[in-house]
Length: 111
Figure 1 (cartoon, one colour):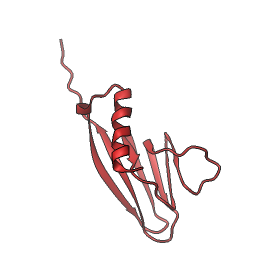
Figure 2 (figure 1 turned 180 degrees about the vertical axis):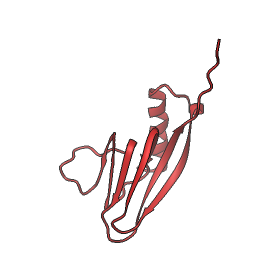
Figure 3 (figure 1 turned 120 degrees about the horizontal axis):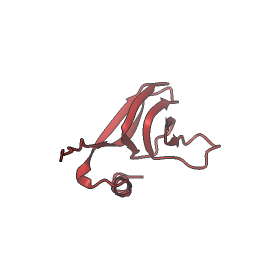
Figure 4 (figure 1 turned 135 degrees about the horizontal axis):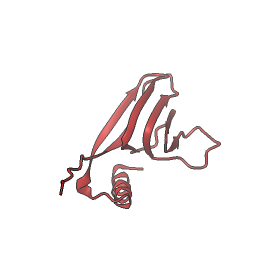
């Protein structure tokens, strides 16, 4: 996965969900976890889309799992939403890059 492919997937996914490109914004997120570190993210109205394949990391969310060392999984997910939990298996600091997709607040008009 690279940034260009990730952005194309995001545009397609958001269009499939009924959103125009003006309905959401994207920003890069770069998290550094210390050795054996852990990070929880609440992303209930957001999407965290993996921009690369991190090694020695376990990323679980309400939408799936990404862990290159987990041999009993036959599909790894790049798209994470809901409760996202990230674990660094390495004793050394490790980083993970996401593209963070946030839905914009929609103004509604009263008749």
